[in-house]
Image 1: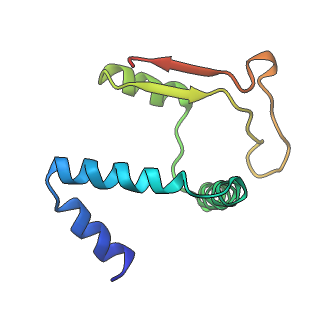
Image 2: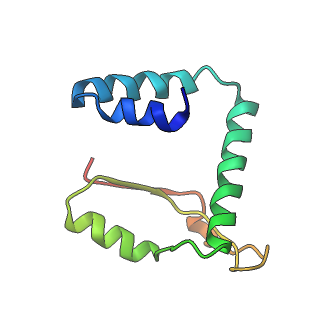
Image 3: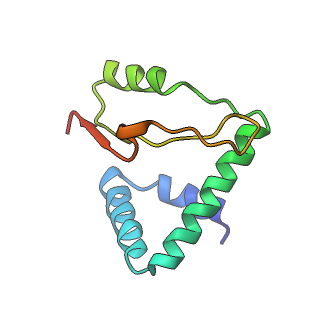
Length: 105
C-alpha cells in the first residue's frame, strides 16, 4: 500500500477513527530518538525551503494569524528568526527569539 492509498483510507474514516489514528501516529513519534526527530525536522525544513525557492506560495505571518483569529482557531507559534530570501543570511528577532505565543487554547 502506498502512502497516498493509506491517506485515502485514513481520510475515509469517521471523525472518531481519524482522531484515534492521529493520536496513535503522534504517540509513535515519541518512540523516536532525539537524533531521529532532529533528522526529520531537518528534512522537513529542507523540503519547505526548496518549495519556497521553487515558487510555492508563502504568506506573511500577520496575514495567517489574522485569518486564524477571524475563524476563532487556536494559535501557537514560536518566534523564530528566518533567512533572507534566496540567501543563507539569518535574521533575528532579538529578545523575542524562541518565545512562544498561545491564543484561544
